[in-house]
Image 1 (cartoon, rainbow over the protein chains, first blue to last red):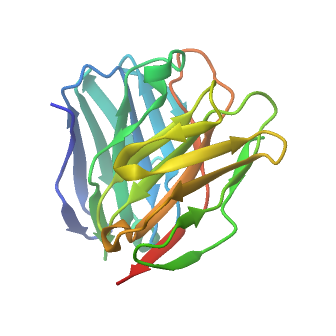
Image 2 (cartoon, rainbow over the protein chains, first blue to last red):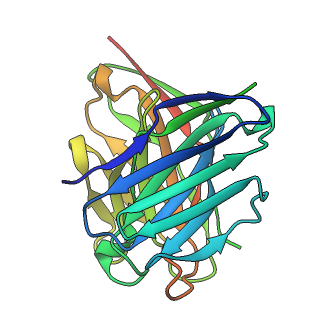
Length: 117
Length: 117
């Protein structure tokens, strides 16, 4: 299995809703990432988990709450979002630590397209 | 700070003609450089990378890229473009590694490639 699977593919939510995005990989990768991508823009890093511990938080607002229950799963909990948070949310994984030629390549999921009304 | 620039928002090319997508970078140390492609409503797919070694790197789908240290460039090339190559292309540079933090890629703004029949 060489894929990163993201669910749901599409999500519409109101500003008072609580929802979650899910990401799963079975490649044995030990680093997982959340990126946010607005239309026609490059992906922007939000969070990095390494060995199930949060390593990087790019000053993301607390209305986004990541969770890594185990080495294969990564969640992004959403609460009280704003319309400007509407975007494509991409999950990615990599083999692990930064060293080594194989660790550098990120495998991306297809994304979850979020619309906040 | 690390940065990468893609000077062209869009590149138009006729099918069968050579395709070049430009990328320049700025890093304080040795660069780790990547190209990714994104098809509509999809995640990013890895094409190729330069870590060290030969300046000409060959990747997926017939793409290659040439690392030029003196010009700080990493242009993506394909000798004969296909209509199916029409997509959004991102150049990325890996920032200086913080051990155990995983990869932290900085993406360029993206170049839309349109291959016309």
